[in-house]
Image: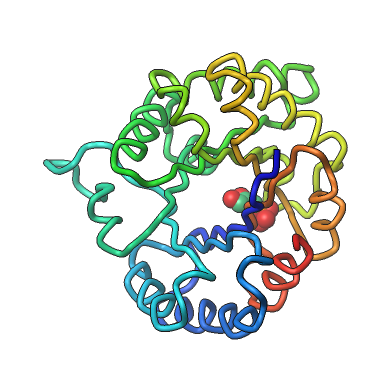
Amino acid sequence: MSRRPIIAGNWKMHNNREESKKLVCAIKDSISTIDKDALPEVVVAPVFTSLDVVSESICNCGCERIKLAAQNCFYEPKGAFTGEISIDMIKDFNAKFIIIGHSERRQIFGESDEMINKKALAIIESGLTPIICCGETLEQRELGVTDSHIASQIVKALDGVKPDDVANVVIAYEPIWAIGTGKTCDSVEANRVIKGIRSTLAQIAGNENAQKVRILYGGSVKPETIKEQMAQSDIDGALVGGASLKADSFVEIIKGAM
Ligand code: 13P
């Protein structure tokens, strides 16, 4: 089964509008001459307030090479939800993906598995693709509960999703202790956990659908680590934080994934 790799940059709460535009244009300039069928699916996730400038820059520069993601959404279509943004509002900017369940949202903003499930269902219903994050803390790893914790996050996030729709979601395995720490998870170990995610997906949606799901690794991905990560059987790309904030390092990661 060949799965098209994804290299996604999660810009987190960085880059104002001008900086966002500069960064996406620099990425586009560096990959504009690469045959687009050879490229992984390249995705950038700016802050909400930069979605319009990044969307315009992508369109002006040739949509096929870079796709837009939002970093979060709310699952209700409209209403009295101060500070939230709906999926349709994100669709206005031609976004294709929405990241949900990032550990920063879970830990800092108290998002529960139930909320993440509601978001997943609403995103799928809208025709966009959720990038569903999961991952264990260092404490959970040391207690030996990594695999059961991740399986539980996946089962809960996908509760009620139709098997055929499961095939189209994207999962990002991001061990929390590897995020922003410079400590990358060993590639063989990341692949082992990701294989476990795929077998959980097979239990939920059947093996054929599970084989189609793209599962990314995230956590201190760097230009120096991507080749070994991509060489693993089940790692289908990367969700990149810090190293996606500089065009040079992000483009090196894109090229490393080719
Ligand atoms: P870093 O690449 O900075 O470790 O961040 C990973 C991440 O959280 C991406 O969503």
